[in-house]
Amino acid sequence: LFYVILLHLKHQNVSSNLWWMTPGLLNILDDSTDLLGVRLKGVLLLKIFLEKCFVDDEHWISFHDTGLYALYEPILLSMCYCLPPGYSSKDSLAIWRIVFPTLNSIYSLQFKRNQLAYQHHLGNFLSQLLLQNVIPRINITDEKLTEFALETLIKIIKTLKVSIVAHLQRIIYTLGEYMVRNAFFTAFTSLVDKTIEVFSTLIEECPTGRINAHKYDLLAIILITFEKCQKEGKMTGELTLRLRQLIINLECKGCNLTNDKNEILKIKDMREILS
Image (cartoon, rainbow, N blue to C red; front, side):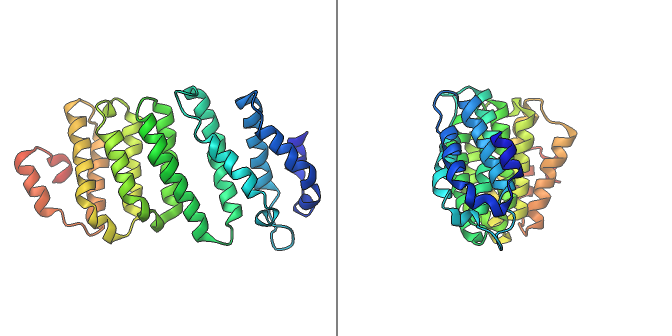
């Protein structure tokens, strides 16, 4: 019933119904008996509320003016930390698939007229949750969770665009340390693919100057990935092309790699991606 009401609630009727909707939603979101069956259903209701009920801020109350952000954002953020081993991988993924986009929706509405504030909060989510907690803790111990984290990282990079430069160094370090250097990295084709996609997106969105400043870090990640895949029999024609394309993308960003490639080719057979 709650779902049906929210689905059909008109923007002009939001303020007159907050008196019962807010306690109702908070009661579901605060439930301590059933995380998936009750609390997560509450997040779904909140997502519907955010996406369907605030479509005309010019004539009716905006989400920002309701003051609800301070109530819901901490609840959603706390649910993002439902990580193994405290929770099963299956439960964590089920929670993330609903909570992550809902959190983005609440940021979008709250900071609809303040793009810098939206980017700041989305950047904090990226840095504090994904880069400092999720990827280091999950690492590659769970393919599905890590893949979802990397997919989320790609979406955030595309959303923040040039502003992602503030997190460039942390992204390079985190993925290099916890993904590429991991002894079992090449055992998971999907994670290799997603990691390459992260760096491809990063190179595309970041300013030329910052990519140039980190060209050796990025080049090292490409070469290590190639060498590991080659030694462990995981190299494919498609993967070779994708790594080669990353090199090309760096050069298109103004990175002069000619001397570096010549020196590398003297000691390593990497002509497939460097020539």
